[in-house]
Length: 170
Image (tube, rainbow, N blue to C red; front, side, top):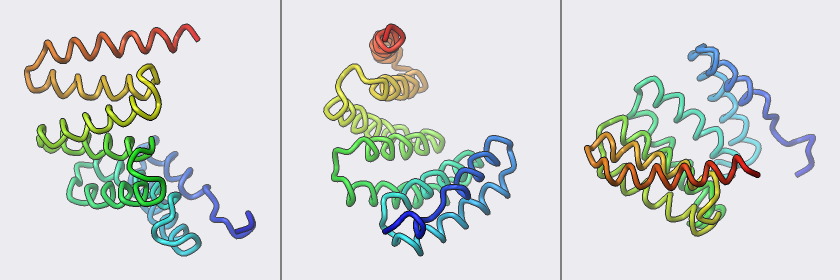
């Protein structure tokens, strides 16, 4: 496909801007229009469609519309897995995002399982000292704090701090 027929990112980027400005209705309208254009131009299962689905899911989750967010996250996850395989960093990100949703709903055991899968995948694919591993460690630690498992949280946060220090020294 030549670039002249490739869908523009401007609608998605504008929706991102509206989200940060708190203009939720405008953001949702732009994400949905972006999704429509991308699906039409690239197909419903193209990896770029997963980006918009994830953004729309993040918006829904942030508004407490959990029932709307979950199928969007799951569809995004499915697209990444189909396009890149089960061990791609984008799959780990989708698992992480779905875990955040589950934490928001108090589904802590489901969230823990997804956080652990995301962490293991990031360690395997990106390396144990990658900043994304640190993010996974912090997310899992926050869940452990929330569920009164302070020692586990402390161990993860110490490791995350070590990664942060490595990154800061580069």
